[in-house]
Length: 226
Length: 380
Ligand SMILES: Nc1ncnc2c1ncn2[C@@H]1O[C@H](COP(=O)(O)OP(=O)(O)OP(=O)(O)O)[C@@H](O)[C@H]1O
Ligand SMILES: [Mg+2]
Image 1 (cartoon, helix red, strand yellow):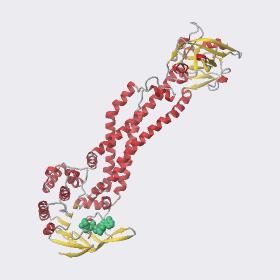
Image 2: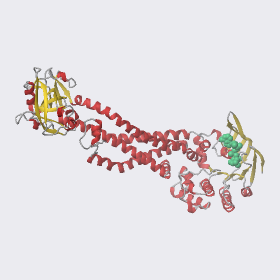
Image 3: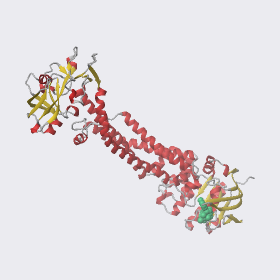
Image 4: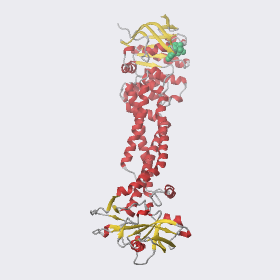
């Protein structure tokens, strides 16, 4: 069976001044549909960079990255946007909430892009907001929320459309234990029910507990995968 | 979907959007208001000149040059035959000297047909039959020379034979007219009075005419309304250059405000745009959403401007704008006590279209350049 995500001999360079900095070195990884996996590693080891490339927000410098059978570096901007919109839920390390939108509107946004019908849309948004426990903040704007609350909105926005792949960049960094566990359980449930593939980036022990597969990244290299 | 997002952006922008829309509406109303003011002023002035002096146009004796007082002696001929008297007003021009309060002052003497009813010039005060040595003058000249009705004024002139003659005249009337060119540097006498003084019976320098134009020989040159108004128009444009400059400055400031809120805000909102791209909004849609947002704010500004601007502008055009000192400051024909702006539909539509076009461009250009960035760099 075709892998959901397959990465071969992949390198990522960032230009720095006249030279370059290689953030990812010779990455070879495969992810099957329905995996609940995480990338762990110290700060600066390349976790975010890797998730960005898988999520087609960035392109590798060398090697292959196939997502759902398509080489991401060959996608047109339009195709990449469609891939993100239809199949990938992204939880950003920096939340990236739309500042002028309310919580409800932020969570609704991906569904608007997919032209989901208004009635169904509202139901799905309400459900996602309830998952992350922000029912009473539906009308607040990001500036009025705490860091943890913003993170939960970002999570709701990523899972609201029930995508095939959720890329979660340190999703629990600002959450207390209780909220972390609640959200992780919700994600496990989604994973079991809908075969949603989760790829985390984390150094949170609570998250690592839940992972079925742990990929360790050090200095842009995979040093462990089990 | 695009419209919904654009609207959401605008509403979500809150005070920022509101301020932007408000400034835009001020720009709109100001442009329309100022333009109306200029148009009203100019129309008022031109109508005044037509009603007080020009009629449909004038026949000038071929040698008449209003800028050369020494030509006045020769620039007169007998009134051509066959001209309907009711359709024409005759003028006879010469130069003279007056002695208001002992001072000496060169002045243009204008004799005008006393019985005319074509022009608003109140010539009935000058009727020869009812007494001689009467003159009238405009309120500006009267004020400048410190003269009032009933005053006596010594006047000296030269007759056709070149000999000086002098007489005391009574100021029978001071008229109030918006037209500067029948006021400054001149006094008005009856035509018969002038003819007698100059010993020039039946002669005229020019005559204003209304109606179907008769064909006259080479001795008379027809001056159309446009020709007679062209000098005023040039002067008006020149005088208004200063005012227009302020107006352009104002617009420029407003445009900077718009530019700031649109263009700079757009760059400040780069991250926001990046977020939308990261979530899967295609660049074409991004451009549409944010350009439409700019356009929507323009349309809202039109609505808002119409809401508060229409009653304001209509009020001005109905009750006029009382700016009497402006008149003197600019030394230009136009209005007496109040200026009545006139607005044209054309300028309203043009302004609205222009503002929205500018908005379209200043929204489109920055968002297009941002939409070309990769999502990660837009998010930085
Ligand atoms: N745009 C960029 N230009 C240059 N270098 C970059 C850029 N983005 C990331 N890097 C470098 O690449 C390396 C990996 O960055 P990345 O953000 O992937 O780390 P990370 O593992 O997510 O770290 P953290 O746990 O702190 O989020 C870092 O050393 C970083 O300095
Ligand atoms: Mg990171």
